[in-house]
Image 1: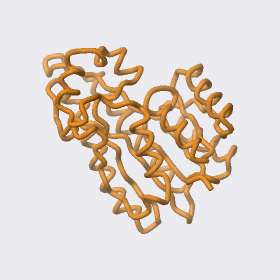
Image 2: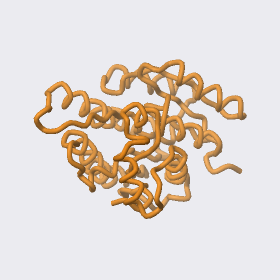
Image 3: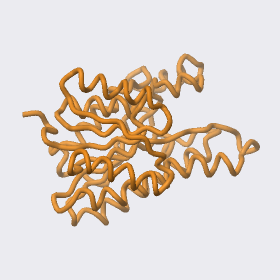
Image 4: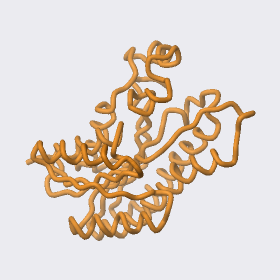
Length: 249
């Protein structure tokens, strides 16, 4: 029997990159997966098509996680289709790097609304969606919360908030058999990091050289950790910030 057989998982921001890899991995482990996307419908449908072609179950649902009404609809549609929920992966997020002189209110609110508010909105509804059986909330943080690189003040602030929320909710929700953990990746080769110019840059090369395993991460590296946290293999873990960075700190 697969580790996530008869489980239902919802992955936010799952049309590309880490989110897509997590959705596919959870499906291979037997979960029925809700692939949430904000605007990239075609990419989300490709993820669903790949899962289905490999014998898995998946649907794509559009929702802006920074809007409460959208999150309400997302969960309502997911529960209408699958009837229950066991795993929530709060993956949706954005990053904008800039020196403090380039700070703008718009960038601040954009990053906090998706990275922090969206996570809280989804977690709030997931708590009741899990029911008496409990469930697993997996947040996607970042190594920046501990590495604190220059030029990332706002982004690092959002991911530091994710660390704090993870630990608070693990204590708050533990008595309801809901585990809350965070995966904090280092630099990962995704569509977003390529578009931002990180992959193939001197920055990425420097990060790889500082990483004990001597490379930057791949989405599948993170997906494997998510599958572990979603399964009963991690039933005694909650409130953990798992640094999935190849040893980079």
